[in-house]
Image (tube, rainbow, N blue to C red; front, side, top):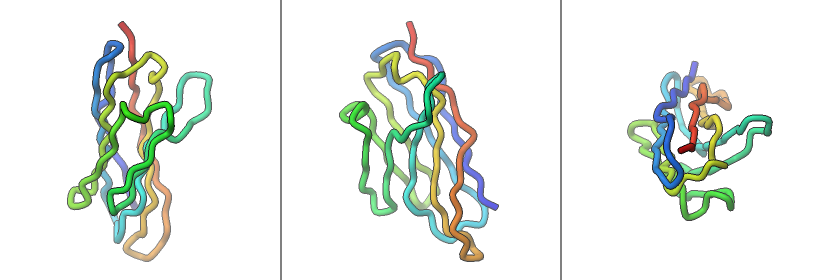
Length: 120
């Protein structure tokens, strides 16, 4: 059993900053690429950022230069630092990861989601 627990959502004014974290726990042998997705009201869930275990980040164009993804493998935790937030960043943010379990199963795991609201 593998769980992802997110934290850090909330209400922030336009131009503000917020940091999300996602902690993995359970029967993990290897944590593979780690992701952040978001789903705005009435829209499909979409990829925001990803980071490999080696630390190579990828961003969707709409957040490049404003969001930073990072990870701490020792803590099995990854982060999303969001700066210069815009109202259109309002969404439920989900973390996601592919994990090799202790029993050598390849698992895809999702966090519970955390709401980020950008509004004055």
